Length: 479
Image (tube, rainbow, N blue to C red; front, side, top):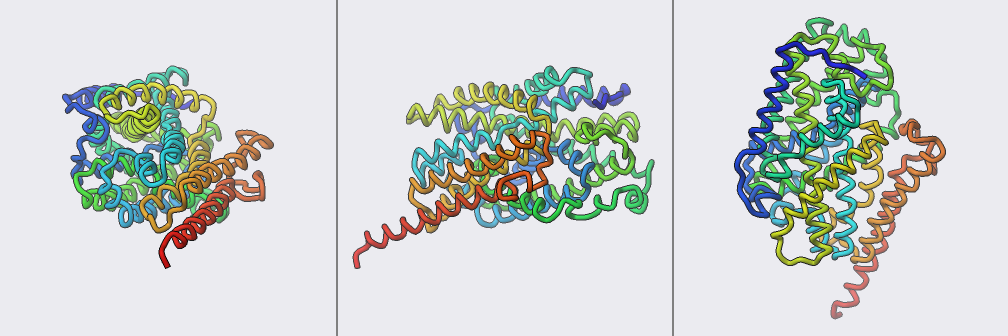
């Protein structure tokens, strides 16, 4: 495990960040369900961009791990496809989502596909926004900074990250996201020139990297890259994107804000990918088990006092923003989309209470997952592989009624898409173990990535249901 060695200036920066987070997070708040869940639909473009950028870019150690292991393919798989689908979301969905004036994706599923589909969608949404990958990264950083074992570090990092959203809800999350947005950029903008000054420019970097690190596929092959493009469909069904659109002041804010956020992600990806490449070139002997700690290793090797502290704060801000946001999203799913919907309540006065119950439940589940699947990239891959095939068609057709199948077919397509992907994934892991290289498609049934059979199953069921629905409508129309 990488252990941080902090000077007084570094410690002061870290303490200042934690203290200011507490101050801003617990600042006075407006009361009411709409304020607690979506900040009274009041987000203007600067705040909208800051909260979306900070929330969506939480996997900082996972980015370091993938860049250290494979190089530029990190950008090809974790950057480029998400830009494309985010732009598509902005141009096609953002206005429609905001105009619907709902709270969550299952609200829309209930309105368009019925209650059973909404409940199944709520279960899938809960698992999609599990903060486990980000809880794991927070625990790893806390462990590096304090010397705590992983379990107490996970507990401490999670408690600090979610305490203020327990009290203040989404409005507290948004206020902290603005601070975290500034810090994540500041840390990398200051640290990267320091590393370059001690090593060298692009020529030095190219000379000290394995050749595959400079290939866009990282030597992993096109099929593996393509599956990440399919996983990036996640963007279209991500509860975080939808929640922030619901919270935007107007549909125009939602659309313009997402487009601006894509530009911010591009810049931040350039910084983080460069830092990961310098970590690989400057510390080539890092043990494989420590690849996820490439950025802390870079800090310990090359950064001076003060800059090191700011860099650690940037990493903490990046990941803690997503821990808080995703934990709150999962808690909303538990509180509103499961408990509230199952109790068939008409008023929403008790939804904040149910959401607080969800915060506790979600935090415990995330800590347990982090202990048993201690790889951020593997968690991302597994969650996207299983639940994107289940969610994508039901969510998209909810906003495109022409392509809706009947409620029963939509429900079946959701369940079968996720189940087939999960079965193929479980088959491969049962035969080869959880540590197997998931980029090797030969490990799985049919010799393909598990997402492909899941998507095929969902598409077949949906196509049959759509044909049956159109036939029913044609027969119902007078000749």
